[in-house]
Image (tube, rainbow over all chains, first blue to last red):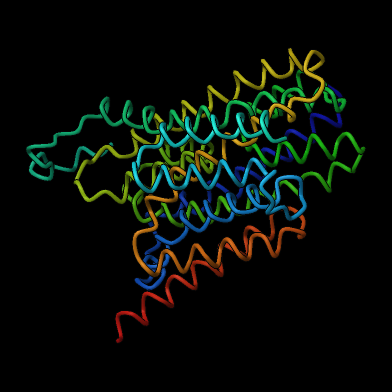
Length: 107
Length: 246
């Protein structure tokens, strides 16, 4: 490992931990206002959606809503499975299966 | 630990132990571990192919432990960007974790620092998403942090393992992205998101998150994601308040 790489690792470790830990560290000493804690429940679905939608609609970085976009087709079918069956592993299995099949058949 | 909680706080039908919480955390994280595995593999391969040494690649997974930031760092190193820029970029990419910490904090108030420190280090998208779901279940288990611990340690070991496989196989797999394994994580997230879309405020919030994440996709360093999430949360709060008033 070069000196540069060492500095890189230390720096990246410091800023990452520096984002993750401090809020938790002082959690015993602060109390959030009610309006804030009410808002927190919206974070998980918002994060999930903000990761999923670009991954499915613009897999190559470009907007693609055609039937050749396997990410979109398999993602839509996975969403239907998730809605009707509420089973995570089944959703992943069907989603990946459709994805690969679509790529082989259409792509 | 949480010994100050008496046994009367426990639901008698549904008694939780440290061990059962730990294994529940591992179990709940399993699909996400499957989804993250290809990313560890691809990261290892991309990093060594881009010119990082094996030690540095492994050290990054062991100490930084932040998937998307590691990808971007490996990419930037390959273009010989400055160290300062890469560290700054890492900071911006990981800002969303502060949001997760704020969300978890009210549930973790009673924990001592020797719990908060490692759990803070291990805070990832995946462990956050399964753990906050555990904390939000209304049972009175005093050991929900053991669930977090189980989830986090599983994610961590998995990430180290697949990084090592990836950096070993790096030269053998010329273009790992072409296998379409990058669909594993989005499809996992779809399976987690869809059942959560149960009421109008959440649906409105998710619609805003989706539209803005696409519209702001051009912004660097996942800033688009950050802004999309913040405005989506505001939307959720707004719709919820309005439906309460009327």
